Image 1 (tube, rainbow, N blue to C red):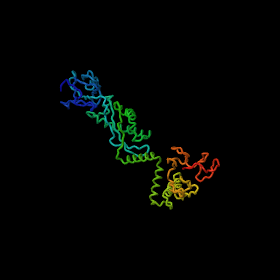
Image 2 (image 1 turned 90 degrees about the horizontal axis):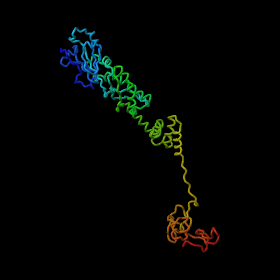
Image 3 (image 1 turned 30 degrees about the vertical axis):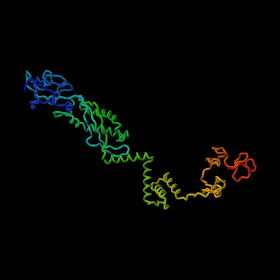
Length: 405
Protein backbone atom coordinates (compact mmCIF):
# COMPACT_ATOMS: atom_id res chain seq x y z
CA UNK A 1 0.00 0.00 0.00
CA UNK A 2 1.25 3.48 -0.83
CA UNK A 3 2.71 5.45 2.03
CA UNK A 4 0.83 8.60 0.93
CA UNK A 5 -2.88 8.03 0.82
CA UNK A 6 -5.68 10.58 0.27
CA UNK A 7 -8.97 10.01 2.10
CA UNK A 8 -11.96 12.16 1.15
CA UNK A 9 -15.74 12.10 0.53
CA UNK A 10 -16.85 9.99 -2.42
CA UNK A 11 -17.86 12.44 -5.17
CA UNK A 12 -20.46 10.00 -6.46
CA UNK A 13 -22.58 10.36 -3.34
CA UNK A 14 -25.36 12.97 -3.25
CA UNK A 15 -24.96 15.00 -0.04
CA UNK A 16 -28.71 15.60 0.19
CA UNK A 17 -29.41 11.84 0.22
CA UNK A 18 -26.55 10.60 2.44
CA UNK A 19 -26.04 11.91 5.98
CA UNK A 20 -23.04 9.77 6.94
CA UNK A 21 -20.58 7.64 4.99
CA UNK A 22 -17.61 5.45 6.02
CA UNK A 23 -14.59 5.82 3.80
CA UNK A 24 -14.08 2.96 1.34
CA UNK A 25 -11.11 2.70 -1.06
CA UNK A 26 -12.59 2.04 -4.50
CA UNK A 27 -9.47 0.25 -5.77
CA UNK A 28 -8.87 -1.84 -2.67
CA UNK A 29 -12.06 -2.00 -0.57
CA UNK A 30 -10.60 -4.65 1.70
CA UNK A 31 -7.77 -2.28 2.68
CA UNK A 32 -9.95 0.77 3.39
CA UNK A 33 -9.22 0.65 7.11
CA UNK A 34 -5.43 0.19 6.66
CA UNK A 35 -4.19 3.76 6.86
CA UNK A 36 -0.59 4.88 6.56
CA UNK A 37 0.96 7.14 9.17
CA UNK A 38 1.08 10.01 6.66
CA UNK A 39 -2.40 9.62 5.23
CA UNK A 40 -3.88 12.88 3.87
CA UNK A 41 -7.44 13.53 5.08
CA UNK A 42 -9.45 16.06 3.06
CA UNK A 43 -12.70 17.38 4.60
CA UNK A 44 -14.98 19.55 2.44
CA UNK A 45 -17.12 22.47 3.57
CA UNK A 46 -20.31 21.49 5.47
CA UNK A 47 -18.63 18.21 6.44
CA UNK A 48 -16.93 16.69 9.47
CA UNK A 49 -14.74 13.62 9.70
CA UNK A 50 -14.45 11.32 12.72
CA UNK A 51 -11.60 8.80 13.12
CA UNK A 52 -12.59 5.54 14.84
CA UNK A 53 -10.25 2.94 16.31
CA UNK A 54 -11.62 -0.18 18.00
CA UNK A 55 -15.07 1.44 18.20
CA UNK A 56 -13.79 4.63 19.84
CA UNK A 57 -14.13 8.10 18.33
CA UNK A 58 -10.56 9.38 18.62
CA UNK A 59 -10.76 12.80 17.03
CA UNK A 60 -13.03 15.14 15.07
CA UNK A 61 -11.87 17.04 11.97
CA UNK A 62 -13.61 20.06 10.45
CA UNK A 63 -13.23 21.41 6.89
CA UNK A 64 -9.58 21.37 5.73
CA UNK A 65 -6.62 19.08 4.90
CA UNK A 66 -4.96 16.97 7.59
CA UNK A 67 -2.01 14.60 7.83
CA UNK A 68 -2.88 11.63 9.98
CA UNK A 69 0.08 10.74 12.14
CA UNK A 70 0.72 9.71 15.68
CA UNK A 71 2.23 13.14 16.31
CA UNK A 72 -1.03 15.02 15.96
CA UNK A 73 -3.26 12.18 17.25
CA UNK A 74 -1.89 11.27 20.70
CA UNK A 75 -4.68 8.82 21.38
CA UNK A 76 -3.78 6.98 18.23
CA UNK A 77 -0.12 6.63 19.34
CA UNK A 78 -1.12 5.02 22.61
CA UNK A 79 -3.49 2.62 20.87
CA UNK A 80 -1.30 1.38 18.02
CA UNK A 81 2.26 1.84 19.46
CA UNK A 82 3.85 2.39 16.06
CA UNK A 83 7.52 1.48 15.53
CA UNK A 84 10.13 4.18 14.83
CA UNK A 85 9.43 5.92 11.54
CA UNK A 86 5.69 5.27 11.67
CA UNK A 87 5.53 4.06 8.10
CA UNK A 88 3.63 0.87 8.84
CA UNK A 89 -0.12 1.02 8.24
CA UNK A 90 -2.54 0.98 11.15
CA UNK A 91 -6.18 -0.09 11.40
CA UNK A 92 -8.74 2.75 11.68
CA UNK A 93 -12.03 3.87 10.13
CA UNK A 94 -12.86 7.35 8.94
CA UNK A 95 -16.48 8.52 8.85
CA UNK A 96 -17.67 11.56 6.95
CA UNK A 97 -20.74 13.37 8.28
CA UNK A 98 -22.80 15.64 6.03
CA UNK A 99 -23.76 18.80 7.96
CA UNK A 100 -25.82 20.46 5.23
CA UNK A 101 -29.28 21.74 6.11
CA UNK A 102 -31.56 19.19 4.49
CA UNK A 103 -35.01 20.80 4.42
CA UNK A 104 -37.11 18.45 2.27
CA UNK A 105 -37.27 15.25 4.30
CA UNK A 106 -40.73 13.79 3.69
CA UNK A 107 -42.80 12.03 6.33
CA UNK A 108 -46.28 10.50 6.43
CA UNK A 109 -48.50 7.94 8.11
CA UNK A 110 -48.26 4.46 6.60
CA UNK A 111 -51.57 3.53 8.26
CA UNK A 112 -54.28 5.95 9.50
CA UNK A 113 -54.43 6.98 13.15
CA UNK A 114 -57.73 6.08 14.83
CA UNK A 115 -59.05 9.20 16.59
CA UNK A 116 -62.47 10.07 18.01
CA UNK A 117 -64.42 13.03 16.66
CA UNK A 118 -64.95 15.50 19.56
CA UNK A 119 -68.52 16.42 18.59
CA UNK A 120 -70.12 13.20 17.37
CA UNK A 121 -67.81 10.76 19.25
CA UNK A 122 -67.34 8.64 16.12
CA UNK A 123 -63.91 6.92 15.79
CA UNK A 124 -62.45 7.89 12.43
CA UNK A 125 -59.15 7.07 10.70
CA UNK A 126 -56.93 10.13 10.29
CA UNK A 127 -53.99 10.45 7.91
CA UNK A 128 -51.25 13.09 7.99
CA UNK A 129 -48.16 13.92 5.97
CA UNK A 130 -45.65 16.72 5.51
CA UNK A 131 -41.91 17.40 5.54
CA UNK A 132 -39.22 18.60 7.91
CA UNK A 133 -35.68 19.92 7.82
CA UNK A 134 -32.70 18.80 9.93
CA UNK A 135 -29.01 19.42 10.43
CA UNK A 136 -26.41 17.18 12.11
CA UNK A 137 -25.27 19.11 15.16
CA UNK A 138 -23.16 16.57 17.12
CA UNK A 139 -21.33 14.23 14.75
CA UNK A 140 -19.99 11.92 17.47
CA UNK A 141 -23.39 11.42 19.09
CA UNK A 142 -25.03 10.99 15.71
CA UNK A 143 -22.60 8.25 14.61
CA UNK A 144 -22.54 6.39 17.92
CA UNK A 145 -26.32 6.31 18.40
CA UNK A 146 -27.62 5.91 14.87
CA UNK A 147 -25.03 4.47 12.50
CA UNK A 148 -23.92 1.35 14.35
CA UNK A 149 -22.52 -1.28 11.98
CA UNK A 150 -23.80 0.37 8.81
CA UNK A 151 -21.46 1.68 6.14
CA UNK A 152 -23.69 4.69 5.41
CA UNK A 153 -26.87 6.36 6.63
CA UNK A 154 -29.28 7.56 3.94
CA UNK A 155 -32.32 9.80 4.05
CA UNK A 156 -34.72 6.83 3.85
CA UNK A 157 -32.96 5.03 6.70
CA UNK A 158 -33.10 8.17 8.85
CA UNK A 159 -36.84 8.58 8.25
CA UNK A 160 -37.43 4.93 9.03
CA UNK A 161 -35.49 5.29 12.28
CA UNK A 162 -37.61 8.24 13.45
CA UNK A 163 -40.96 7.33 11.91
CA UNK A 164 -42.45 5.77 15.02
CA UNK A 165 -41.37 8.59 17.34
CA UNK A 166 -42.51 11.30 14.91
CA UNK A 167 -45.92 9.78 14.30
CA UNK A 168 -46.42 9.29 18.02
CA UNK A 169 -45.78 12.98 18.71
CA UNK A 170 -47.83 14.14 15.72
CA UNK A 171 -50.69 11.80 16.61
CA UNK A 172 -50.77 13.17 20.16
CA UNK A 173 -50.80 16.73 18.81
CA UNK A 174 -53.68 16.08 16.40
CA UNK A 175 -55.65 14.31 19.13
CA UNK A 176 -55.06 17.28 21.45
CA UNK A 177 -56.38 19.72 18.86
CA UNK A 178 -59.45 17.59 18.20
CA UNK A 179 -60.38 16.75 21.81
CA UNK A 180 -59.19 19.60 24.02
CA UNK A 181 -59.75 22.39 21.50
CA UNK A 182 -62.82 20.62 20.05
CA UNK A 183 -61.89 21.07 16.41
CA UNK A 184 -63.64 18.96 13.81
CA UNK A 185 -61.43 16.90 11.53
CA UNK A 186 -62.86 18.74 8.50
CA UNK A 187 -61.94 22.12 10.04
CA UNK A 188 -58.47 21.19 11.26
CA UNK A 189 -56.83 22.36 8.00
CA UNK A 190 -57.23 25.94 9.20
CA UNK A 191 -54.88 25.18 12.13
CA UNK A 192 -52.04 23.50 10.19
CA UNK A 193 -49.73 26.50 10.58
CA UNK A 194 -50.19 26.64 14.34
CA UNK A 195 -49.72 22.89 14.57
CA UNK A 196 -46.53 23.08 12.50
CA UNK A 197 -45.07 25.70 14.83
CA UNK A 198 -45.84 23.54 17.84
CA UNK A 199 -44.52 20.43 16.08
CA UNK A 200 -40.98 21.86 15.95
CA UNK A 201 -40.86 22.10 19.75
CA UNK A 202 -42.54 18.70 20.10
CA UNK A 203 -39.98 16.80 17.99
CA UNK A 204 -36.90 18.77 19.12
CA UNK A 205 -36.13 16.53 22.16
CA UNK A 206 -36.47 13.44 19.95
CA UNK A 207 -33.86 14.67 17.45
CA UNK A 208 -31.45 16.29 19.90
CA UNK A 209 -31.04 13.01 21.74
CA UNK A 210 -29.33 11.69 18.59
CA UNK A 211 -27.24 14.77 17.83
CA UNK A 212 -29.70 16.22 15.26
CA UNK A 213 -31.08 19.75 15.25
CA UNK A 214 -34.57 20.23 13.70
CA UNK A 215 -34.61 23.26 11.37
CA UNK A 216 -38.36 23.18 10.73
CA UNK A 217 -41.32 20.86 10.71
CA UNK A 218 -44.36 21.23 8.46
CA UNK A 219 -47.67 19.41 8.57
CA UNK A 220 -48.87 19.49 4.98
CA UNK A 221 -52.26 17.87 5.38
CA UNK A 222 -54.50 16.10 7.90
CA UNK A 223 -57.32 14.21 6.20
CA UNK A 224 -59.55 11.13 6.29
CA UNK A 225 -60.27 8.41 3.69
CA UNK A 226 -63.42 9.31 1.76
CA UNK A 227 -64.57 5.70 1.38
CA UNK A 228 -64.39 4.75 5.06
CA UNK A 229 -67.74 3.80 6.67
CA UNK A 230 -67.10 5.85 9.81
CA UNK A 231 -66.26 8.91 7.71
CA UNK A 232 -69.43 8.46 5.66
CA UNK A 233 -71.49 8.25 8.88
CA UNK A 234 -69.84 11.41 10.20
CA UNK A 235 -70.51 13.32 6.97
CA UNK A 236 -74.13 12.18 7.00
CA UNK A 237 -74.59 13.32 10.61
CA UNK A 238 -73.03 16.70 9.84
CA UNK A 239 -75.22 17.10 6.76
CA UNK A 240 -78.38 16.30 8.71
CA UNK A 241 -77.44 18.76 11.43
CA UNK A 242 -76.70 21.52 8.92
CA UNK A 243 -80.05 20.91 7.23
CA UNK A 244 -81.93 21.06 10.53
CA UNK A 245 -80.13 24.25 11.55
CA UNK A 246 -81.05 25.77 8.20
CA UNK A 247 -84.72 24.83 8.64
CA UNK A 248 -84.78 26.01 12.25
CA UNK A 249 -85.51 22.87 14.30
CA UNK A 250 -83.53 20.33 16.28
CA UNK A 251 -83.13 16.57 16.12
CA UNK A 252 -86.02 15.78 18.49
CA UNK A 253 -88.38 17.91 16.45
CA UNK A 254 -87.22 16.24 13.24
CA UNK A 255 -87.95 12.83 14.73
CA UNK A 256 -91.37 14.11 15.73
CA UNK A 257 -92.12 15.22 12.18
CA UNK A 258 -90.91 11.88 10.80
CA UNK A 259 -93.12 9.93 13.25
CA UNK A 260 -96.10 12.11 12.40
CA UNK A 261 -95.59 11.56 8.67
CA UNK A 262 -95.30 7.78 9.14
CA UNK A 263 -98.51 7.61 11.17
CA UNK A 264 -100.33 9.72 8.61
CA UNK A 265 -99.22 7.36 5.85
CA UNK A 266 -100.14 4.29 7.91
CA UNK A 267 -103.67 5.63 8.46
CA UNK A 268 -104.34 5.43 4.72
CA UNK A 269 -106.00 8.82 4.65
CA UNK A 270 -108.72 7.91 7.19
CA UNK A 271 -106.85 9.33 10.15
CA UNK A 272 -106.04 7.81 13.51
CA UNK A 273 -108.81 9.56 15.42
CA UNK A 274 -111.71 7.85 13.64
CA UNK A 275 -113.00 11.20 12.43
CA UNK A 276 -111.26 11.39 9.04
CA UNK A 277 -108.58 13.83 10.19
CA UNK A 278 -105.01 12.46 9.73
CA UNK A 279 -103.41 15.55 11.27
CA UNK A 280 -105.34 15.12 14.51
CA UNK A 281 -104.63 11.40 14.70
CA UNK A 282 -100.92 11.93 14.00
CA UNK A 283 -100.69 14.75 16.52
CA UNK A 284 -102.44 12.79 19.30
CA UNK A 285 -100.40 9.68 18.58
CA UNK A 286 -97.23 11.72 18.52
CA UNK A 287 -97.92 13.25 21.91
CA UNK A 288 -98.65 9.83 23.39
CA UNK A 289 -95.73 8.06 21.72
CA UNK A 290 -93.07 10.59 22.67
CA UNK A 291 -94.54 11.45 26.05
CA UNK A 292 -94.18 15.10 25.19
CA UNK A 293 -97.56 16.59 25.95
CA UNK A 294 -95.98 19.82 24.83
CA UNK A 295 -96.61 22.62 22.47
CA UNK A 296 -96.44 20.56 19.29
CA UNK A 297 -99.01 18.01 20.42
CA UNK A 298 -101.36 20.75 21.61
CA UNK A 299 -101.00 22.59 18.34
CA UNK A 300 -101.81 19.47 16.32
CA UNK A 301 -104.86 18.73 18.50
CA UNK A 302 -106.17 22.27 18.18
CA UNK A 303 -105.76 22.16 14.43
CA UNK A 304 -107.61 18.84 14.28
CA UNK A 305 -110.49 20.15 16.41
CA UNK A 306 -110.76 23.19 14.18
CA UNK A 307 -110.89 21.05 11.04
CA UNK A 308 -113.53 18.69 12.52
CA UNK A 309 -115.81 21.38 13.97
CA UNK A 310 -118.66 22.65 11.72
CA UNK A 311 -117.76 25.94 10.17
CA UNK A 312 -120.29 28.82 10.46
CA UNK A 313 -122.19 29.49 7.24
CA UNK A 314 -122.79 33.06 6.06
CA UNK A 315 -126.36 34.30 6.78
CA UNK A 316 -128.33 35.93 4.00
CA UNK A 317 -128.30 39.67 4.15
CA UNK A 318 -131.49 41.63 4.80
CA UNK A 319 -133.16 43.47 1.89
CA UNK A 320 -132.14 46.77 3.40
CA UNK A 321 -128.45 45.92 3.40
CA UNK A 322 -128.44 44.04 0.08
CA UNK A 323 -130.41 46.51 -2.04
CA UNK A 324 -128.92 49.24 -4.19
CA UNK A 325 -130.50 52.18 -6.07
CA UNK A 326 -130.94 52.22 -9.82
CA UNK A 327 -128.57 54.77 -11.38
CA UNK A 328 -131.35 55.87 -13.76
CA UNK A 329 -134.65 55.93 -11.88
CA UNK A 330 -133.36 55.67 -8.31
CA UNK A 331 -135.64 52.76 -7.41
CA UNK A 332 -134.32 50.12 -4.98
CA UNK A 333 -132.89 47.05 -6.74
CA UNK A 334 -131.62 43.68 -5.47
CA UNK A 335 -127.93 43.11 -4.80
CA UNK A 336 -127.66 40.21 -7.26
CA UNK A 337 -129.68 41.76 -10.12
CA UNK A 338 -128.15 42.93 -13.36
CA UNK A 339 -131.03 45.18 -14.56
CA UNK A 340 -133.45 47.50 -12.78
CA UNK A 341 -136.92 45.85 -12.38
CA UNK A 342 -138.61 49.28 -12.70
CA UNK A 343 -136.95 50.89 -15.76
CA UNK A 344 -134.78 48.07 -17.16
CA UNK A 345 -131.55 50.09 -16.90
CA UNK A 346 -128.28 48.15 -16.55
CA UNK A 347 -127.07 48.04 -12.98
CA UNK A 348 -123.49 47.30 -14.01
CA UNK A 349 -123.05 50.44 -16.05
CA UNK A 350 -120.95 53.19 -14.56
CA UNK A 351 -122.78 56.43 -13.69
CA UNK A 352 -122.50 59.16 -16.31
CA UNK A 353 -123.44 62.83 -16.83
CA UNK A 354 -126.99 63.10 -18.30
CA UNK A 355 -125.88 66.13 -20.33
CA UNK A 356 -122.54 65.15 -21.91
CA UNK A 357 -122.31 61.44 -21.04
CA UNK A 358 -118.95 61.71 -19.27
CA UNK A 359 -118.25 59.14 -16.52
CA UNK A 360 -118.58 60.65 -13.08
CA UNK A 361 -118.28 59.37 -9.51
CA UNK A 362 -121.41 58.12 -7.80
CA UNK A 363 -121.42 60.90 -5.21
CA UNK A 364 -120.63 63.72 -7.67
CA UNK A 365 -123.11 66.66 -7.77
CA UNK A 366 -121.69 68.32 -10.90
CA UNK A 367 -120.02 66.95 -14.04
CA UNK A 368 -116.30 67.56 -14.09
CA UNK A 369 -116.42 67.98 -17.89
CA UNK A 370 -119.44 70.24 -18.62
CA UNK A 371 -120.02 71.58 -15.09
CA UNK A 372 -123.80 70.98 -15.20
CA UNK A 373 -125.61 69.54 -12.15
CA UNK A 374 -126.13 65.80 -12.00
CA UNK A 375 -129.57 64.64 -10.81
CA UNK A 376 -132.34 66.81 -9.28
CA UNK A 377 -131.37 69.72 -7.13
CA UNK A 378 -133.42 72.13 -5.02
CA UNK A 379 -133.48 75.88 -5.61
CA UNK A 380 -131.20 76.15 -2.62
CA UNK A 381 -128.69 73.86 -4.39
CA UNK A 382 -129.25 70.80 -2.21
CA UNK A 383 -129.47 67.41 -4.04
CA UNK A 384 -132.92 65.80 -4.18
CA UNK A 385 -133.94 62.17 -4.23
CA UNK A 386 -135.77 61.09 -7.40
CA UNK A 387 -139.14 60.70 -5.57
CA UNK A 388 -138.68 63.53 -3.03
CA UNK A 389 -141.62 65.99 -2.76
CA UNK A 390 -139.88 68.44 -0.41
CA UNK A 391 -136.26 69.50 0.09
CA UNK A 392 -134.57 67.98 3.11
CA UNK A 393 -132.49 71.15 3.60
CA UNK A 394 -134.92 74.12 3.18
CA UNK A 395 -138.29 72.31 3.36
CA UNK A 396 -139.65 73.88 0.21
CA UNK A 397 -141.64 72.00 -2.39
CA UNK A 398 -139.56 70.32 -5.06
CA UNK A 399 -141.90 71.30 -7.86
CA UNK A 400 -140.05 73.34 -10.38
CA UNK A 401 -136.61 72.08 -9.13
CA UNK A 402 -133.81 71.38 -11.57
CA UNK A 403 -134.05 67.90 -13.12
CA UNK A 404 -131.53 65.64 -14.77
CA UNK A 405 -132.76 66.40 -18.29
